Length: 602
Ligand code: PEP
Ligand code: MG
Image 1 (cartoon, rainbow, N blue to C red):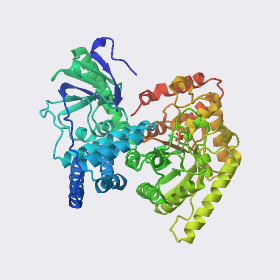
Image 2 (image 1 turned 30 degrees about the horizontal axis):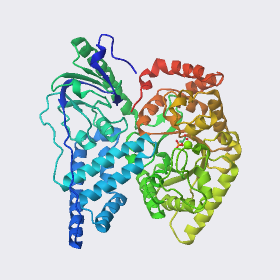
Image 3 (image 1 turned 120 degrees about the vertical axis):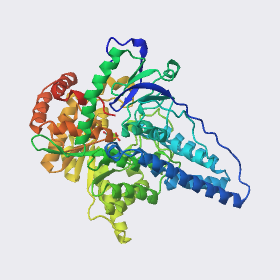
Image 4 (image 1 turned 90 degrees about the vertical axis):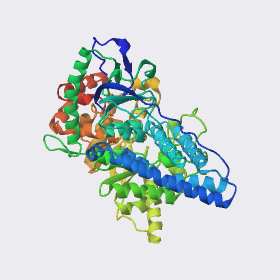
């Protein structure tokens, strides 16, 4: 992170997390969002229940219309570049599962609509909050936004706020919902700052989508501000300067001019293929956990889904999901992505992905709390093979969805050959069963293996004989190879993608794939890192899969480099004996031409 220039008094600078890369300079516009209260009463007759269900349906319709018109306020080219966040809210508004629960609460427990909504929203939020995943946590805010908007529609309230904006205003609030950001007068507002929020919250993504520079999570800012005071918002660096003098203003105006031209350039390339200067093609795909993330992947130039993590539906509910429910989600992803490919990873429950179901099946459940070493326990494929009923349900759902597009199945945490063979056996039985039931299926569904356990990296040649493709899960490969918990901040400094052991293992995996003629992708976070992607390409990875936010920068980098250069860089760093030396080498390669890409592109 670059600090403000030395002539800016330190007391006038406030730090947070920057969203996107823009810069705003303008007068403060303070926004206070009214809190929505809700009534709560029991329905005493069947007629009241019916009337309440009708009120809910009406509020839902009004809210859909409100979000749809806010969505229209976002210019189409910006939606295309950065994803349709309000589309996600519209999808939540049509979620049959959530509304099925709300309606049940009204019918069975005789709750009024507001109380039923707030109850079901709190239930889902609790389930999501127990998961250690930043993306999913940021979905809490979406859920609350949708629920609040519905309650407001039921009560015909609107959150209140000041309405007169000066030219170039910087909006400052404790927090803002995505639809509140989308409905800001874009012509008048130049930036947004909130005391709360995270970089991956949907409010942040909306601000990015409509091109508003934003800094979130700036504590104690509001007491230092008054309406009309000048503010500089540096979203690239994540800081805010209160009441800047002319020197500071001129400095930031110059910085803004050079950033503007860079942003235009990076997004211009996002929809072009990742073709290096010497015509080497790398496929760049997206990682998703929810169907709602798919529009973002496609809007950022993702060529399909390289990793669909399917744990979420098992982590957010009291009961195991049924085949129909799974099938419906998979079908939506596959059909929406078609003809682009979708790699559906089978259940990877365990370790940091603990399900809300306590004892899911006779084969063994998950420990109640974290004192067992769960990363080495009954995780992923191990759990599935011990619970074939649960596994079979998922396989049936995936196979049924396969007819709607280009589907592959990927197996996580494979550590021996037996696990693949047993899975393929189960898959063959499931296929036969579905065929006997005349269920329409794709002609062939490839089965790939994640290489994320050191043992698998060593026996990769044997595994490659059984698999249609390999995908390197660098997050776990690093965790297990370097013996450090990927969720433990105390050892995060030791989490080294450029450790010689990791680089040599990746090289071995890719060579094995080539020898056996199977493709090798990388779907762990290394693929999304500007520092690592050229090394992975130089090692021979043909596909990189990553979160949508990283796709434009990685594509841009690959289009500006040559395959020959990445190979040279990689051969050089493979001779080095420490991670630091390797990183220095990569930084000096990137530093000259790609300096601007080294800043996070959130
Ligand atoms: C990985 O381990 O790199 C991976 C992609 O899987 P997950 O992060 O879901 O464990
Ligand atoms: Mg993994």
